[in-house]
Image 1 (tube, rainbow, N blue to C red):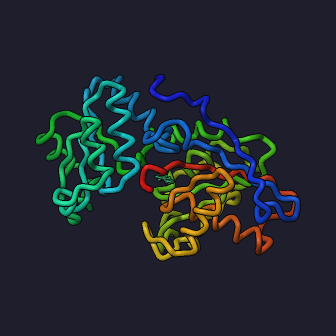
Image 2 (cartoon, rainbow, N blue to C red):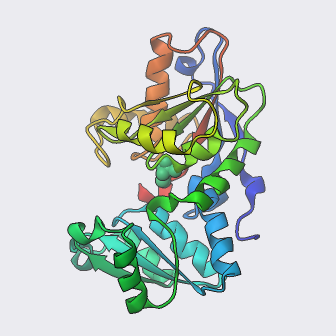
Amino acid sequence: MDIIDERKIFLQELVHPRFRVNNISVSVLRLDLIHPVISGNKWFKLKENIRAGMDGSFGQLLTFGGAYSNHLIATAAAANQAGLKSVGIVRGLHGAVHETETLKHCREYGMQLHFISREDYDRKNDPQFLNRLEEQFGKSFIISEGGANEYGIRGAAEIAKFIPVDTTDVCVSAGTATTFIGLRNTLPVHTFLHGFAPLKGGNYLADFIRAHVIAPDTNWTLTDEYHFGGFGKTTAELLAFIEEMMEHDLPLDKVYTAKMMMGIRDLISKNYFKPGSRITAIHTGGLQGN
Ligand SMILES: *Cc1c(COP(=O)(O)O)cnc(C)c1O
């Protein structure tokens, strides 16, 4: 599928002094550059889903997300380019009244939006509920929220091929942890994987990870210490950090990647990483949300 030109991906070495102590180097894998909205890890989680949707001649994708969802807009744009119809089931009824920029763009890409209450949204994996949606919207290839399914894991695994072999530590933000799992199942065993949850209590993800990783569970860790008040919340410190990194030619989104990068900087200052570590941080995109 040539919806996306993956050759735009490159590795950016950070020259920022606070990321270069104890002979440590931090490089950022710029997955955000492949497309303005089919951005970062979302493309990788979608590609196998779209292929399956096309192979099964479903003609239509149906997926789930909130009013600011990077996944929803990426699905809308990718479906549009692949010649598939798309339906977006949106969490919460308020979005129908106050349309966000994200939702507006989803519609412009041809996505049909359907707003449901948070209670109904909680049934997003319930087969009976999914049947009802298909009765309403027609036969669809259904993609779990956030692309968190086997196809998503398989597609995300491809990100590993862009990571240099001498990398000692890989850092990635984990929302559903689908990208994290794809990476863990593909990276060499000696490469340690650090996940950064952008939400309070993000450690619940550890169960989902344990259920899906095939590698021994000694070479990864997950922290939820860098949530900065919770999912989608920001602090003045976080916003100042985004400004500062802009000056180092690194645009970051406030929901995921800025929190991870601040986490990395903090962990470096606490001597968490061994001297000489070669860290690759994954820029998972999300800039449309800013
Ligand atoms: C969706 C998203 C994530 C989380 O990815 P998961 O595979 O769900 O863990 C991380 N960063 C950005 C920018 C995202 O949009």
